[in-house]
Length: 188
Image (cartoon, rainbow, N blue to C red; front, side, top):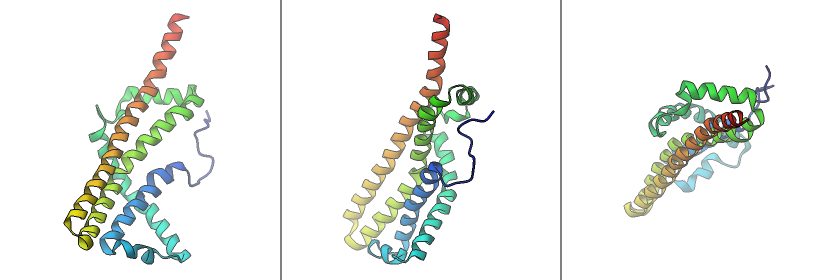
């Protein structure tokens, strides 16, 4: 049975942007900060189209390289464990995809994507935070560098907090529809 979620052709989509390109870009800026001061990053990446394309390609593939780091983070940071590993959840998820396509696309796909995006951003923001703090500390001193690492870690924690929120919302969306469907069937 064909569903609206099946890809028809290979293309660069939302998943590539949210899970690979954007986190890869943040991580690449962090890596560049280890080698070049913040003021020189623009001159290193440059305004030359070739350099910009190289940056975009490297960022995308770096995102692919660091995405697997988010897999153990999901298990460790999700309250009660990563929900997609639960067989009952997986069965219910597949059932919803086949029977409630519009609900799946509108609610569940959104929550799953936001859950995966927020956990994928934890590692890149941590890398960029440390790199930026070291860069600032080398130029301005330890106190501003310490403030930068604190700010960066707060951003990283923000992604962890949002991950936990979206994870719970994702779980409730999948199991919540089942309860509403059962309640309607029993009351009918």
